[in-house]
Amino acid sequence: MSYADFRLETVAETIPNPFRRVVRFVFEWIPIAIVAGLWELASGTAVSSEILPPPSAVFAVSWELLVSGRILPHLQVSLYRIGVGLGLSIVVGVALGVGMARVKPIENFFEVFLALIYPVPKAALVPLAILWLGIGTETAILIVFLACLLPIVLNSYNAARNVDRNLIWSARMMGMPAWKLPIKIVVPATIPSILTGIRQAIPIAFIALVSAELIASNRGVGFEILRHGQIGNYTSMFAVLVVISGTAFVAVRGYEWLERRVVTWT
Image (tube, rainbow, N blue to C red):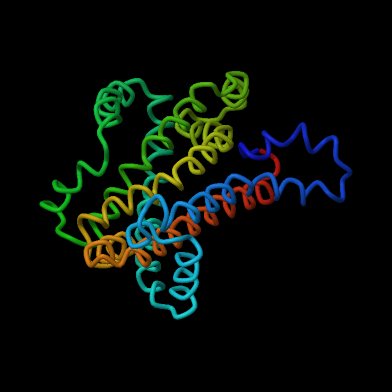
C-alpha cells in the first residue's frame, strides 16, 4: 500500500464506493495543484519569469518535447541506463543480501564495506568512475547500480534473517540438501521484502542517473537539463525536469500496479 493509499484509507471508508476513486484522485493531486498555483503566481512577480518560468509555459514546452520527439532519444538512453543499473543491482543485491543473512563469513566480509559506502553520496563517486570508465553510459550505469544496491541488499538481508525456522527445519527433515535451502526456501520467503526494496530503489535510480548525467554524459535527460541551463533556456530546462519527473512517477506507479496484480499472494 502506498503512502497516499494509507493516508486516504480512513476517509475513503466513509464515502460511497462509486465515488471513492474520484475522491482519492482529487486528494492525491491537491498538493500538486497548490504548488503549481503558487508557482504561477510567483513567476513574474516575486521572481523574474526569465529565471522562474510559469508552469503553464513549462508544461507546454514539456508537451512539445514529447510530441515532437526531441526528448525521446535522450529519454531512451536514460531509461536504458536505469534498466541495466537497476537490473544488476537486483541480481547482485538479492544474492548478497541472502548470502550475508545465511553465511556468516559473507556477512563479516561485506558488512563493514556496506557500512562505509552507505553514507557516501553516489554523485561524489562520479569523478572516480570517469577515471575508470570515461564519460558515457558505463559511468551512469555504475552510479545507478551503486545507488540502488543498498536498499535491495538491506531488504533481502533482513527478510532472509527472519525466515521462519520451521520452514528450514521441515525442508531439512524432508532431505533437502543445505545448498538448496537458499534457492528453494529462503529466496521465495523473502520475495515480499525484495519487491519492497526494488520499489524503494526505482526513484533512487532516477536521482542517481540525473546526478551522473549532469557530470559525466553527453546524452540523456541529465545532459539536456545541464545544456539548457548553461545557455539560459530555463523554460526548456524545467520542461525536461517535468518529463523525467513524470517518467519516474509512471515507473513507480506502474511497478506498484504490477506488484499488486502479478504477485497477489505476497
